[in-house]
Length: 216
Image (cartoon, rainbow, N blue to C red; front, top):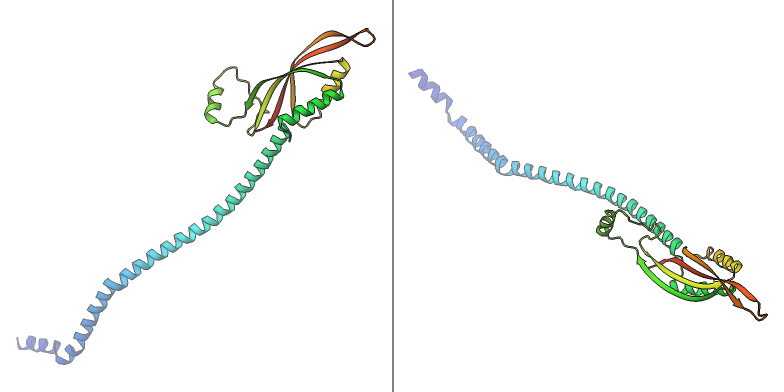
């Protein structure tokens, strides 16, 4: 018993307590600082780092998206220019009034006399997808490949009279107009007209349907 008491007295001495208590208190304070300050700061630092990595990734993706947008925009501009060229190729630069005036000039140059001009129908190109899908269900659907978006077509019936040779020249000149002109339902009727020499002059009365394409 005396030995054990002596050992306890040897373990706890004023000298040992003088350095043990400050070390113990410092360790507790360090642990508390680590738990309530260092660890939260470390977690927050990791979160900030992850957010920074995400922002850098988005920045890189944004650069790629800008590059893709530029390529898509260039393709769009190219397609738009091609579309305008197609529309101009089909419809030309003249409106209907100018085109009819030009027809009158060509007719006069080739001794073609107009009797009547009767507009029959105007069709405007539609890009309505629901209407297109509905029309696709019809069996006898006539799709006009020349009626593209941005154009419209005029169906006009003409009646005029001319000699056969003059008729050929008139039709030949129509082919050189900038507008696309389609001719259908041509009917020829031979008629006779008196001339100054009282000799009957053979003429043709022509009924013809024409389709013109113009811009909207």
